Length: 196
Image (tube, rainbow, N blue to C red):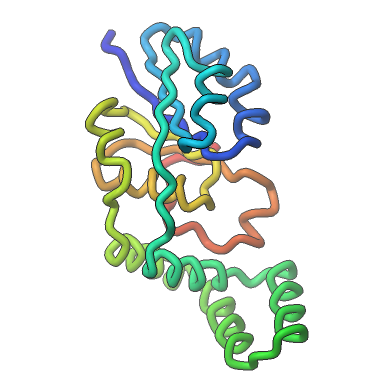
């Protein structure tokens, strides 16, 4: 059987403790036909290598590129497309503290629009067409992964990784970092093939 490669996003210290430091990575390590690549940032590279690298596990680090103007604009729109009690409390407090009726009305309109499945799908489609999947080219060329696993579907680094994988036809899986993120952090710009 040919060796398979999985790339796991490890951009957060919480992921190191709550996922990679558990039975999850141990069970993957036991699969000799599986190459595991943990992707992290340069500032976490030394720790991740000392804690996890060895055997069929490699650690690869990338530079943290700041969000582009388009990514920032989409981040705002997608974050405001969630209509939940949490987001209403946050926006009401922001309005009462800083004012800005236009900003509050924009949130209200986008939050109501975000309730429509068609609007969410259109937003994701527009995101994929206006934000190019240019990140992580070297990673994909070097490791040629069979699957990419996002450990935080609402992190810009994981979003870029999923987008790059999908642009190359690589299967994707993902999870949210915390149970409340789906109702407070905006809609997902990129939806993985499978959720964990």
